[in-house]
Length: 192
Image (cartoon, rainbow, N blue to C red; front, side, top):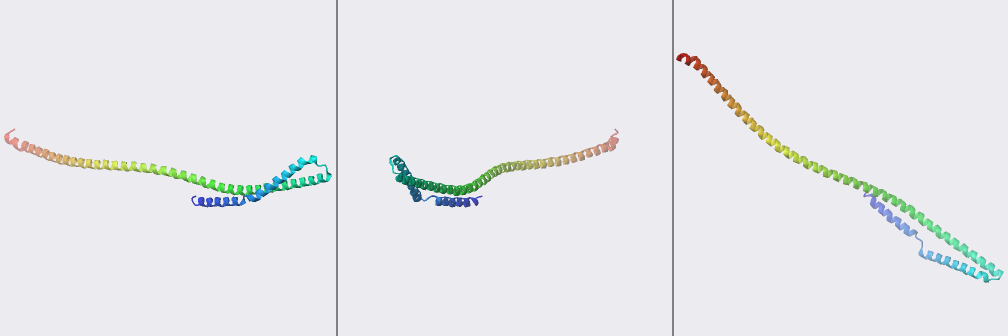
């Protein structure tokens, strides 16, 4: 999109130059306007003089001049309107085309900008989730270390209990053997 934007801007600059080139020559416009104005003035003057002119020849001549002036004025007006239409046709077509391209680029730009914003929001959410996950992992590691310590304590307690149980069993066995010996040997000697 960014590649198209400078190209479109340069096209707009070129179109503006072409439009400026199509502008009427101010001197020519002034000259034509002066001719139209003088023709209109002569026409008005002739219309004002008409009632006072009695000569048929003069009347005929003035009528011809009036018609000639009207024809010139009409031809000039037609030329001006034709040139105006050409200018509008040229500029309208070029500017419409450039405007369409500019609108398309603007639409793509807005869509890309929207996508970037959405992605930035997603990145921030992912960063928050990653931070939470890191905190959970740290907490789990602490819990795991505590559980490992507790397991070792339990194993030590278990070993102690097994040792104590073994000693108690040995003592109990020794006491039992001692009791059996006492019953079997000592009591008969004592007469019990």
